[in-house]
Length: 284
Image (cartoon, rainbow, N blue to C red; front, side):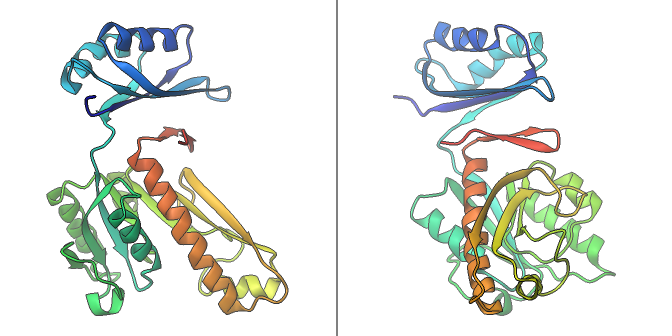
């Protein structure tokens, strides 16, 4: 069997799209391995993800011949390799629990990614307590005065490394509107799900003082609207009266790492499609 490919598409909903797409693949000798689709009634748009074995043809040939059908339905689409690792930059500040988890899952084959750089606004001995192996590390300090230059440096690192995704793994710096626009649709952030209730410093301590019973985490695409980008994945955990602030911090870290890893897995698997301010997530 050839290396499987993935076709993702979205367009205005019309009759016959599924039939046309599956017939296109059948006529070229492709074998469909998995297919998922969704019609959003609110936006009246159709979304589809098809994984298939391209026996007897290449991705470039399929892209060239699919253009006509895509134009007919005004599709946003792409055909990519399913197995090729996605090149990822991981950005952190001082807490490295999400970084450690991502690297572990990558090393055991759980995440189909290739970390091409770790970037931090702190020096390596302050930011990281784990072995990152031969992954390049970049210290890019940020101050109010140097923020434009620092962000330009990050863009240059991403371009040089041919990064397809930037992961903010508890990176405690706010992207400018320019930076958010530059990485639109290819930058994922993780934060606690108290927002907008408990803003600022020590959110878990604020939550403890209010006696919360559920804590959670949200992974979303980065946009100019701080912490309000399209959501990819969320999870929660229950809290009791016996939990101290340190317990909330510990449980919060655990949720953050799990939620972020799942969001990265979904992105790397071409399972996340943008739908305005929301996402369509084809799980599998």
